[in-house]
View 1 (tube, rainbow, N blue to C red):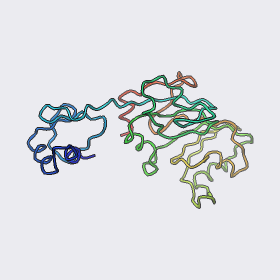
View 2 (cartoon, one colour):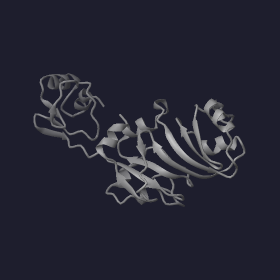
View 3 (cartoon, rainbow, N blue to C red):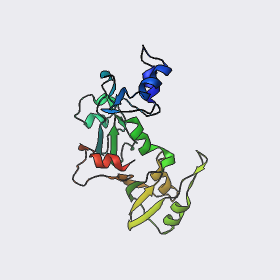
View 4 (cartoon, rainbow, N blue to C red):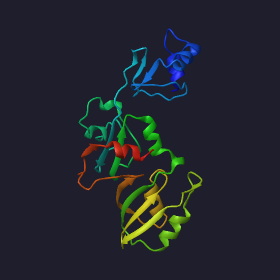
Length: 231
């Protein structure tokens, strides 16, 4: 929220008090003086007024997980292990998934406690590219490329998929780049040709790529450079 609104929510301050205090340089956010009332503060921000701590803040956390098959993209589930179950982290209940993968789909899953960051990753309007490796039951023909690039009409949602890029790797394998995430989208797109997807693996989301060294079920924190790549 805005800094002036945060201050005005304090029991002893109103909106006018907040604006005057900010203008006078008496408010620090993460150690530096902020004189702009519309400056955005979050739950991770450390906020001080005249040296008095109003909000301690908490560390933002970001992870990439190599999701194995059989693991649910959820924070809790009655029948299957969840992505969060694979994390040996304190207060993991505070984390959430930045995007999801089907039960049988493997690959890159991003996990964080930063809602603003995860919205940048998943918001449809930002069209972050998602790259998948696909193996199918039947051969993949050249006609798939033009059809996927043109978009496929999904009658249930009454929409046409955004243009997608298909790179054929082998007779039964391809790499598909999407800019959206409809329900079972990859399987439904290949289903347009009555071709069943046997294996689906997400390699990347936006600028973030799953490391080959990260085995299924393993995870690691994102580096500061990786976190900033999405901005």
